[in-house]
Image (cartoon, rainbow, N blue to C red; front, side):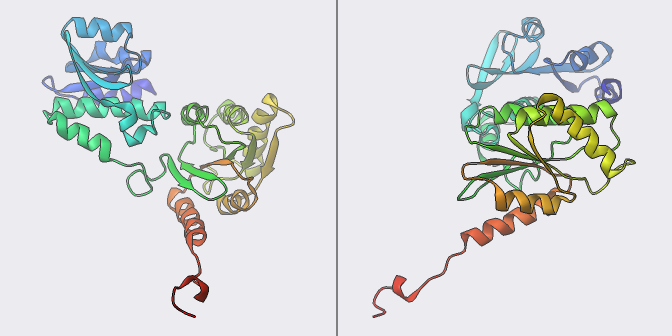
Length: 291
């Protein structure tokens, strides 16, 4: 997969930049085959590659002491506090910080003013409108609901790191296996889910991608039960029914994560629940001077 994705930086003109993840050896290793300039980003300010690159006059972006920082040669610019950037969810969403670093680098390389970069970071709000299917959070009276398009091990691991910083209990997950993955990949999703969630609802994707419903369910359950044979698991065929079930049955204080494959439909369903909850009736007794 890294070789396939490496085609993109290999296509950059010599006077352009490829922005590479210094925390991923496969990605960082792409630099050796590039004819363009390279900028790196890292969540680790002490990453040896970043240090060596910057000491040689190279450009990088790092997460440093609670700041998003641009480093070039021996100078640094602190762009913004991480907690000031809504996409990071007060610094809890590590993978969002990882996404922000290359975006900041791209803006800097294109000579955007630092004030404009900072303003963009502070005003880009994670929401169904701006980031559909990426950490869309809804606050209900009884619980919180998050919709995310996590559908592979890397996505589950990123969400897991976020959930580790959430105090709410129980953590409920609505998940599905992806049919065109290897058996071990689907089993791994179940394993990760069992570690992430206190309660699990296994549903089916709309497109089964070449497998039967039962085959995918069995592989998911195998992964879950390898971690905890007694894990609370319910199998519900469709995403709509699964969402309806958790919305009606989750306990007070729960944090519900819905891993959706048809994000617009899931968001529409949840927003209808939210609109219904926010409705209220005005009675004559509530209106002054009506008696």
